Length: 396
Length: 107
Image 1: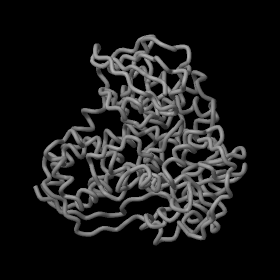
Image 2: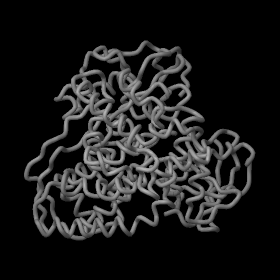
Image 3: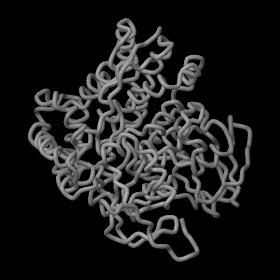
Image 4: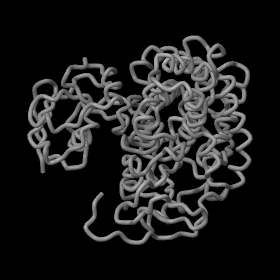
């Protein structure tokens, strides 16, 4: 990303990207920011926003300049609270703890789980299609993450019923210091407390992923004091993100029956369709990075010490990268989408998320002819995009 | 522009111009070389862009990182000493003449 001319001053915007209306329908705002420049300074929040694909991709893949170690949230309070988890670390420290966290999430490690996840998906889809109507969030999308994944993580039963609340509130805490973030802090505190006092050896399920983190520490692969924060790596992200992706997929297929027909005719299109869902409706819309040294992005100067919000959701709708970006086209197979992020911090659970989604939609494709949305309520979250409820009727 | 040769299906050699800055995986996908999937988008997370580095400027390639090594243990075609994830090989001018054999099984 070198340019021959000297960098230009950063464009500024007074747009408030975190109002209820903007969160529910961010696309026009994203386009406005993209058209202003690769990176724009948000007057309202005192942070930069990167919204073009090339800028976001560059930032995520240049971790020495755009660091995570001072947090990836958009307020100092939550960056302090979860200091030391894998997401918010750099370099060798990050590589070491990610190496431990990723162990159960590699394609090879997940292979033995495929059959169980498929069987559970089949039984679930059988039950739901027999009912004819269901909530695609609570009945469909939450099922695999809550029953299978949280069991694999293996945290103690006490408190696990709070996991869904912890998940959504920990993502709310990522935003700038607005009411949604402020309201989330007590819940985030509760989650940190649980990770520190309850998610500990002796209380964890034998053979679980959480236990494996402590065993790795016993072998000296990672510092013991990092373990509680590494529990957080499994606690939040394994639930809401996948849940929101599944509900958004149902919503898109309900609105685009022609695309669902393509899948029913050729289920091998499902992995590519999942990429297109994640491009269109990225469950996690943004995180941020601290700028470590004076730098430039596509010719725009950024000062050391500033913070830049990386908008995956906006980059994935960038017309400079994807022709007709607002068109849902499952044959597009955009494997380069940024819905899972990119670079060293790319979503560590992406293989599991894909496996869950693929299993569900293969079963749905075999049985469901049409999804019909009866009622929908979007979730309002600082960084997540998806549904609080999505009542659908299925025609089989 | 440096040229990279991909050996596909164990026999067919395909030589393409590789844009500097793209990864050896991206060059393959953009040129429809075949067999390379790149499902995770180039993040060393899926092991579906597995190649064997056969000849050419092999000393110009970056070392295998811990993350890449972890994933190379997951490849469907067996890992060899010259196995690489092609998404972790960003093309430079020094790559001219590189020959990689695409692993037959990726997913």
